[in-house]
Every structure is written in C-alpha cells, then in structure tokens.
Picture 1 (cartoon, rainbow, N blue to C red):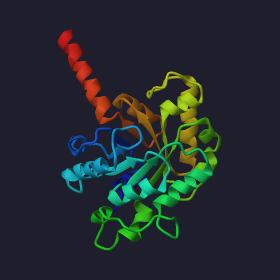
Picture 2 (picture 1 turned 60 degrees about the vertical axis):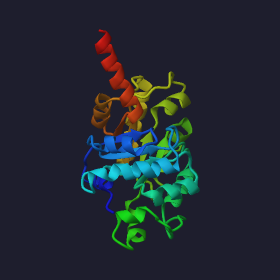
Picture 3 (picture 1 turned 90 degrees about the vertical axis):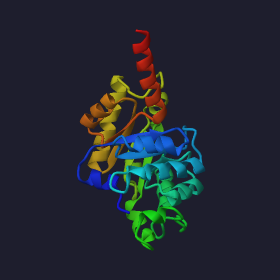
Length: 257
C-alpha cells in the first residue's frame, strides 16, 4: 500500500490534487481519468458524507492501481471518529481543517496513527484491500499522510509548533479562511494581495526548512503552476463543481458571443 503521493514528494516532484464536492462515484471516476496525482473527497464543505466518500474512493480505483490517483479526504473537523472511519474506508491521506495549535495537531496525528504512535482503533475494513493480506497495520503509520490546514492568524502564530509535531507530513493552506482571519477580503482562492503572497512565502520557507510538504487550494491550473514556482509541493486545481461551472460558463459565453 505504498503511498504514491508521498513517494512523489520524496522524489522532489510537484503534484496536482483534484477536489471532489459531488457525492457520486461517477464524478470521482471521471476526475481520476484526467491525470490528477491525488483526489480529495471534501466532507467539510462539499456535499459529501461517509457513504458517498466510500463510493468516491471506489470510483477512483477504476484506472487500476498504477494509474489511479492517491485517495484523500478532507474531514469535517478534528474528530477521531470520522478520521478513523475515513482511513478504514481507504483514504491514504487526510486534510484536517482549522488546526490552530500544537495540541490540535497532536490530536489529529494521534487519531491517524496506530499505537504506539497514536490512538487509532484497528479495523481497516476496506483500506486493507490496498495492502498485502494481513500487512495493512504494519505499514499504515508510515504511509498515511497527515496534513493539518493552516487557515487562521492563530495557526500562523503557532506555525513552528504545529510543524514540529511528530507525524505531521505537511500543511495545507486555505486561502479564503486565512484571508478572512487576517482581515483581507473578499474571501477568494487565487490571491494577489501582497500581504497574502508574503504570508505564502513565509509558509513555504517554514515547511521547506522542516522537510515537510506544503499544499494550497487554488482555482485554476495557471495559479497552481505559479504556486509550484513559489515552492509549494502541491496545489489543488479547483473541484469537480468549480471546473464544471468554469467550463460551462466559457462555452455559454462562446455561444452567446
């Protein structure tokens, strides 16, 4: 059950993440065919629940083990019940919103790791299918990605403490909430404000100095490419919903123009 995303980062590769807001395996299957390195099921702001997340993980596997993207999820909150269930369902990495302190980062990591490194309960009912028979438990602590979100001023103030938590593999930046917390409006994704860009540079330096990955939520491929150039390890290129809207708007404009 080697985590291809983790391996890519270790090799110095920049990756692109897709985002799944629609609660359907078909959307996941289509997105998986487009070349994303990973796909993240959004249980925080997407219209997803546990059952639809399982279906999306199944849809992602249609490309076969070699071509399928790494299955990820964003949990609705830092709560061990849903964290454990999504890992048992087959998530190979989790993004956790609103991690603002070292203690919250430690709680997130503990929920993702089996003892002695955490408190995760053993029962990988679907995740075990990704590993050799009987081997999931022995590899999961090394392969599951833990990515706390940095999206508040409080998290920025505690950044070094969060990055120093053993088991944190990287951080994920939420531009909209981070802007709100810093008093920079409107709440949008592809930011151009000098203060936000300086904050991104600080975050990249901090993560890179610790040897950790850093990702950011974007809308367009052009902005992902720009963030790669700034030093981000990976970027999310919109969601199934936003890409559908952007594509439909462009075609409608061409039709009416």
